[in-house]
Image (cartoon, rainbow, N blue to C red; front, side):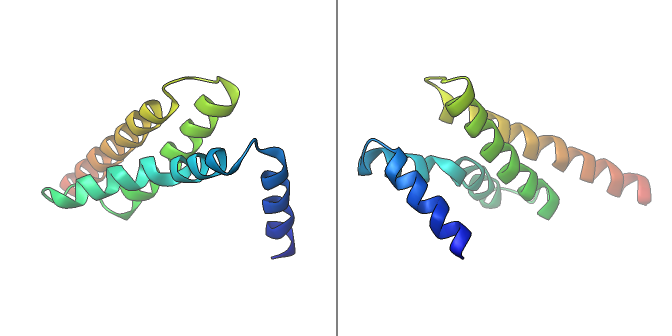
Amino acid sequence: MVLLGIAAYGLAHGSDGVHELVQESSAFGSAGLFVIGIMALGPRAGGATAALTALGAGLVSWMVLEHWLHSPVAYLGSLACAAGGYAVVALLERRRAASDE
């Protein structure tokens, strides 16, 4: 808890303002959550592994695109990576289930 508090303190003092912090926190993991939410509305495709892959791919790609590459379309790129990761793992899960039968 102390380490998280120190990290939060560092983030708060390293930012330009509250607006930047809110924007950063909303984009941090929401790409993966958005993809999972959309996939949950449709027919069952993918499982827990696909969902975790979407979360991880969205998070990592957003951090790379936003902070390392300074891309103006970092959020769209992270949405695409999350959707792609979900789709690939869902297809692999389906293929594995078909070969087990």
